[in-house]
Image (cartoon, rainbow over all chains, first blue to last red; front, side, top):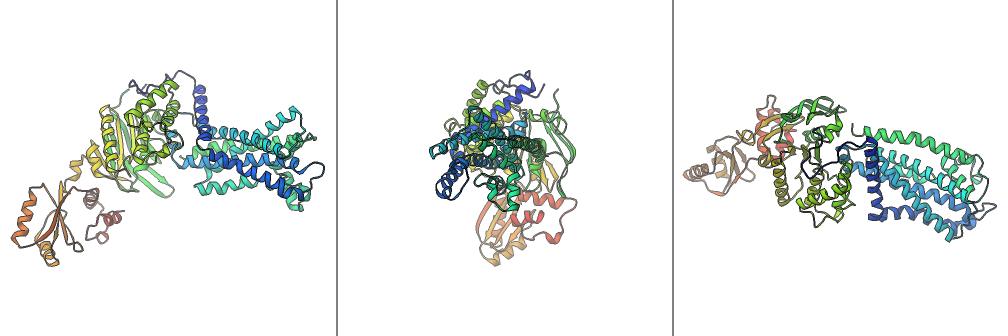
Length: 271
Length: 332
């Protein structure tokens, strides 16, 4: 085989391991690359944490008093929405990161070596889920510090984490699609606004019942609301009903579309 | 199986929508040699490199690298090449060492080997001192060197360099040239694109001149420079009257006159001919302000080549006075 010229120094391991082994290796290496960015460029994560933190404090202390949510305190109502906003902010940074990778030629380097192509996008997606997890822990902590008093059981917490991580995973693929479609950094941040505003038109801050009819119809049924409502019910120890199932179905379906589209876009982009 | 040619390109065409980037390119690069692909911006150099490196698919034609067809055996091609693109393809937040280790691990090196190999390359490219700083703090020359190091982690039989020295200061350029020569000495086959004849001249065994998606000439640097003259001499006459009279007096290949600067320039065979020129001017009582010897530039070569081409540009569109930049503009 002439594929690996061996001149003593750059000697590759023999190609005897399976394709799967190398695919996993490549994925882990690139996930490591993106997680490395967390410490090297902490401002990225900081930016993604600032907005939900600011909104939490703003709504809790400024607007909260004016918003009546019935049986519970406003901060209890608010925190689940803030968690979801935290995840969407992470997704915004993911689409920017994907775009800049495509733009800056790093990807050209990956594409000229014989490695698992899938690792390039999966690396971004998995790192996004890790960042989302950090954001979730931080927001729960901040919430509790300003009066959030969850009532859910341990199982409820597990289900909450599961729902939010599924949401983060699916949304990261959507973010990857946007990052691949965007032709410039400005384009990516413009498209990122779609992600950013999706939780604003949801039940994150106010009860949909208070909204005008047309908007209410949309807000009540859009997939981000389903996540917010599921998480809120779980954390406050309220009955979840079918909302949980709908949330899972929606986001699995979105994943089922976004993941293949992202993969195809990645391959197409350079054909 | 060894092939005599490390790169073989036949009838390569590439369309981007209605834009034809390449209109039928043939190239052969013999193993262990360096081919310089010389051409102005927009001539299609990068498209050739992208096709060779599997970053883009040919619209038509066949492209074989190290025995692997770029459309059918992409992984074979990818494990045969190292590539340095025009834009530094590294992670700017990570250090030089981390970049090399990461790329080594993606190329099936064990962690230990990747680390050892990274250290060797950092040493070789004189980056050891900066090895643990983020790449974004590197100078342009350092980034290029690291980029080249990154393409050599698993020593490739074929190296593709897309304008590796564009934007570098003369010293960094010289360092890179030296490295390229060493690599050639190790038996690596190199295809390098450049806008500089001087660069091709210094490094290449063969030069192919690309213009508007076609190869318009190929040969050694000396062959290409024939007809342009090995050297050019430019004299600045003292006054407009002297300039006019000298213009009537002097004849020669590739003679140009610029009344604005009262400069006359022409090709000569060697420095000894300068004396004849000076004697001639003195005989006729013509005074000069300055005289300079220059090497022929890519502009000169292009001018000569495109004049000889079978379908030369419309004569009216050719500028009478050869201002290098205008000239290239008119050719495109």
